[in-house]
Length: 353
Image 1 (cartoon, rainbow, N blue to C red):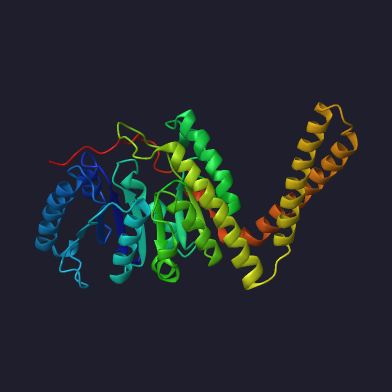
Image 2 (cartoon, rainbow, N blue to C red; image 1 turned 120 degrees about the vertical axis):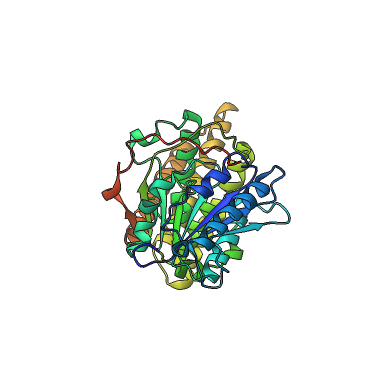
């Protein structure tokens, strides 16, 4: 129990036998229940989860203050295993469903790779616990010192996905969308159509779009990037291709749901005009250049295409501005905790034997 709220934590694992045990062990005592979800790992992750879970649950049975009695049979850790690999999003959704069924008030996610410091879990869940937001997430990009451990490649990729996610989700001040250190209210879980959200690694980006359509408040919490010897299972080129297409589809779906179906909003007109102007202008410029290369007169076409491109950019800018204004009330930046608890340098967890 934390500030009168029942807290659940989902620990996801795929090929994390070297770290997942310690992640489970170091979850703070104020957490009521831990849902350790193994996504059909081919390594020994499931064996580690079972072994650590049994030890913690035996301790909970002997110490009443650690025992959860609301249908959980006294278990503090609930080990769950997918029969086949379904993806990161599916693991999180499995944990969400179990936590909501157990009536946890707030549900956080800790990945089993040891990159998320359990000591700052209270900072992640506070915006949800205190009613400031329905969903809170870590952000490693807000402060330069927080991203010292992030490679240039990671930073560039993250920055690119952040920009695309702003369009798709409508949360224009929220960054680091790939950050999986999150917390969500049970009410938000129960309102979302989880089956409509992707099971794959684009889950975090896709979830933000669904939260926006339901007009849920999202908070950014500054945190430090932590990297060690763990190996990512993400294949970056296919991942970026998949997520980019997913974000485009999410953007169009959000505009339809928020600005056409629910109520008409002029942002959709400016977005459509801007896209048409840019597409027509760029195509016209390309055609004029091709004519010029063939020795034909393409000057008039270039001027007209340039004007169309300029008007498209202006319309797109207006669409973004209107979209930003419409969603300001849904965004919370948790600056009060910036830099707190970052005086030590945590390292990835080691295996529990």
